Image (tube, rainbow, N blue to C red; front, side, top):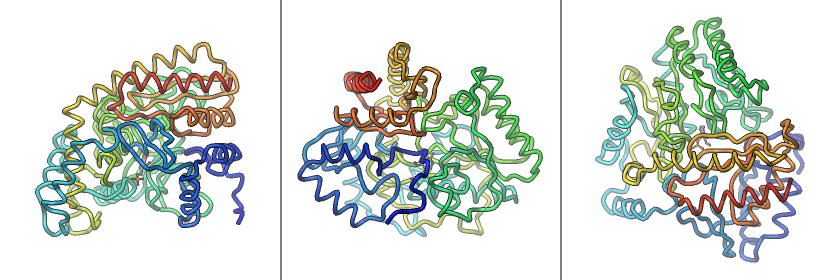
Length: 452
Ligand SMILES: Cc1ncc(COP(=O)(O)O)c(C=O)c1O
């Protein structure tokens, strides 16, 4: 059945109903994958970013995924869960051991791995970000954060950014800023969720003076905080995973404006946290400490689902109510997975590695882009970077070209996602070798050259 939104402009991920998708799938789907894809499309509710799926997965190991017919891809998307690579042997062993020792804990009873994880997160988070609650997914962690902000301030309004993503739940979608998640079939959403334009100076406003533009964007947030006078929190991603890097000084000004107007600052670090950007938390690049941080995705080591809301000590104000109350709030197996993941990140120096490899990758891509007529921008931090595809150097977005490049890369064994219609969004595991990183960048460069 056709929907009335056939011409809907998606900003997150490549389309799973485009002609290019059909052509690629028709040409490449193997005999073992085809029947499973058909069963998937029949069994699952269809949505724009998953079913019908692009292919199947039979194996996920390190940086690689492999389909049922043996086609292998380096996975530069991995839903941002795969910081330590898929199936890290130390993580697999610790989850197995935990299953034998204590497989579940109803949340009225505490247990060692859950407490140890809460303590560990408090230890790695800066300042007095010391009080923790676990959820199963990131969207729920953000909703917990919003509830704490309401309780602590006695206010309910929020400010967030257009184009932001905070999850698929109604609260998270209300503060999110992407039509795919909040418009048409989604409403009505939470009241009081005000949005301001994003800080993407170059693309949203064609401004190259980032300091001045960042100041103007921050002034806009301060203006709304002042005019409303009763905003509970500003919630934002410290760096958008699409990727979009904040202008210098922006977050410091937002932090100060929040302090002035009695609003909390919530940083959604669900894809960016735990080292992806070359710092343990992306907000550390901007030298601020938020009041609440949410983590998710890679916290479960690419195996199990767990997310966390970490709040400053004085925000422990909801003791008489239930703000999370999720069934797996103190699951010892997911907690063990997260604890071991943090250990691996520290032992293998993955935060520093992301910084080093990211600097290298972006320098290589920048030098490639210099002579390439259809790349107008390379941006990112650490191992979260993007290549913007435009019809010429002046920067007219070229989503059709981006899609052609995407399928060429899949043909050559590299998987990633397209964001904002025309940005090749590259986010490899932090464990990737320099050799594999180079191989992947060569694939991207070849595909772009062929499409140019
Ligand atoms: C910035 C951000 N916040 C929240 C979420 C939601 O996390 P989950 O899918 O675990 O609910 C995501 C997921 O992509 C995200 O990127």
